[in-house]
Image 1 (cartoon, rainbow, N blue to C red):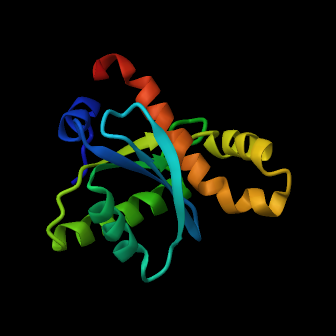
Image 2 (cartoon, rainbow, N blue to C red):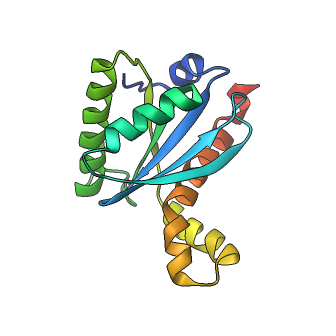
Length: 158
């Protein structure tokens, strides 16, 4: 279920873990929060293939996930572009799959501008090797999106 209002999303996910998806063309980075929405950690990177939706359901069930933030690249003009439309379509398909699986999980889109650049800077500190860094980039970008969502909405969490 898509939620367009931050307060409604926060109400539906109160005291529940949230995952964040950073969707690329081939891979999806995933980060996870604690129930209090104070800590976010990079989790894993999934390949966008025929097993993708099944893998998301497994994560939802294994970790008792109550909501999903999806990073949306809006660009400087804050408008829907080709990539953001692709992410909206992927998320819609995932939502439909979750509903067929009797999982009513709220989704909320969050602007992800510049998170990949920030993730590159962060991961460079850990992995001086570009090849190793690239393996971890997507899930670190997801963590940054999730932290940005929490930090931007901290006053209504209290």
